[in-house]
Length: 224
Image (cartoon, rainbow, N blue to C red; front, side, top):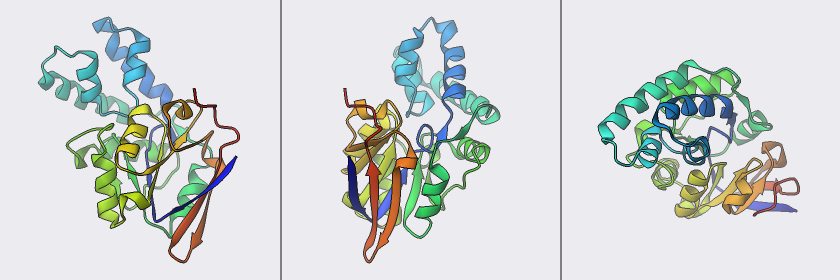
């Protein structure tokens, strides 16, 4: 099924949406979780799309949050220094090039250093506007990051389209009142507005008052 969406701005998650960093994220988080005896499946169900200290708070709810903040900083430093296996999601470069004339931004739970390291490793250019971990007080699934990006671009949230892969990110985009396009084989199960297998199934065409996004959902995993 092919759908066309009218938009005035696009807000892009990074990990799992523009950049495939799954291997390094899961490797480092499972290393962190092992001494705590946390079930690996539980870890992997929580950490994607959130800031690290929030994931730690969910996984170790009784622990002093000051420890989470310290270990989150250590985790960010390890992630920034480990880009082995980080590659661009299919169609990411073409999508970023097509968005150049139009308002768009990255909205990521990574900090600036980690975002830059992963985008560089994937050979992708960071958009002029990036809302990162330093820019917000509340992590996804809170909508703050997406709403802040829309305000910075001076575009009404209802006219923004979000590209996301994780449950937390999809929830955040929907909570911001935006159309959400889920990206990747698991995104459709998290009830985005639309879903695509990867970004090769997305095209952008300019219009007089914005642009149109055409999405081919034919290869997306059935919502379940």
